[in-house]
Image (cartoon, rainbow, N blue to C red; front, side, top):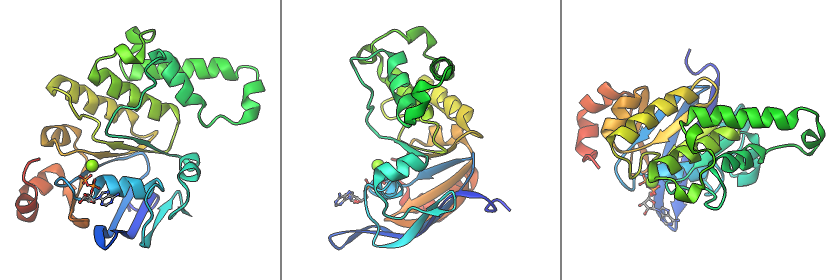
Amino acid sequence: TATADPILKVDGITVDFDGFKAIDNFSMTLERGQLRVLIGPNGAGKSTLCDTIIGRVHSASGSVTFNGENITNKPEFEIVRRGICRKFQTPGVLPSLTVRDNLAVAAQRDRRWWTAFQIGAKAAEARKVEDILEQIGLTERADTLAADLAHGEKQWLEIGMVVATEADLLLLDEPTAGMGPNETSKTAKLIHSLLGKHAVLVIDHDMTFVEELGGKVTVMHQGKFLKQGSVAEVRADPEVAAVYLGR
Ligand code: ADP
Ligand code: MG
């Protein structure tokens, strides 16, 4: 079955902010190497769910299992080390470094001390950076300072930085924020190119983008699981239509 080898299992998570349940008994399972799109109206709890998965926010009950290991409420650095990487809503590139050096820094984030002394490790890393540059479509911009990139390019660089960490699970919170239709379409293609090697959880509320992404969609509302299915199934659902007012 599809759930035979899940990479992530969120089971009955509840997050309580001083009596307000931002997440209320929410469960979701992600398959290895696959895409999942998480949608829901503003304030549904999507970003808080990401915070909880990565250990930035603690859950009052329930569990998060990653690669078969219980990671519930573990410190963020330990979760990141196990192979989950998150891209935030706002681009977090290093503005005074070139595009290439941003990727090189990200690639080194999890490097173990002895690899620095291995012959060929540097060359392999340089090769990896060039591959990612091509994947994110910024080969020609490799020597440009990140500060001088256009908004969309910054977002792609940030996706590239997440990819460079070689995490098994990538969490992309609104990767198309502030993008026009062409850039949005390029982002959907980029995300598809990541699948297989990485499982990707994409949060967005741009339905055009969600349609272009395809795949399985999970709908969240007021911290609760509402619906799951294909884009078409979710779109046709009256309950989803009732809560999901477009933006
Ligand atoms: P989404 O990403 O789906 O738009 P969020 O996860 O950002 O929603 O927020 C879910 C709800 O939790 C919102 O009502 C928001 O105001 C509230 N919230 C988020 N973070 C905090 C916090 N640190 N303290 C209190 N309330 C919060
Ligand atoms: Mg959000």
